[in-house]
Image (cartoon, rainbow, N blue to C red; front, side, top):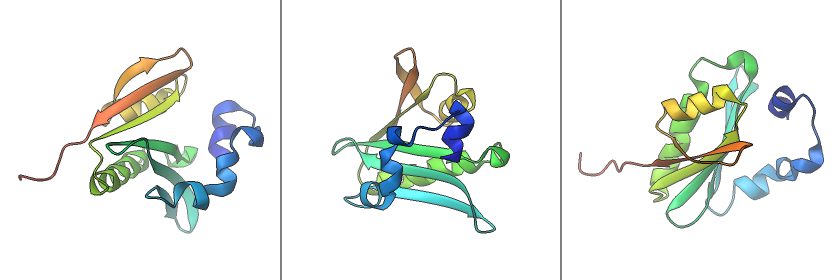
Length: 134
């Protein structure tokens, strides 16, 4: 919620009911929720959920403001991508608000491409390369 407060300047908990049920929504049925800690302090999060049998969705990516630009977002993405490959996904999708420039930069520099911009959000996709055959 701290990340949402920082980005929006206000919080309406009714708009984020999933955060009250992280374990039930993000840690079951093949979904993954990762949390990164430094000195027992939560500094980043990321979730991977199922869009369909071949495509996963990256959600709830957040890095604490004072911990940004230290590679934590990239590391979180790579971990989620690794889980996605293990789960047999061939691609990932995600979305972020258009005015979250740092998030857009994170995704584009890590191989995600915009496939739709609805005016409020940019929607990204990335094809996952198989580790096989190396």
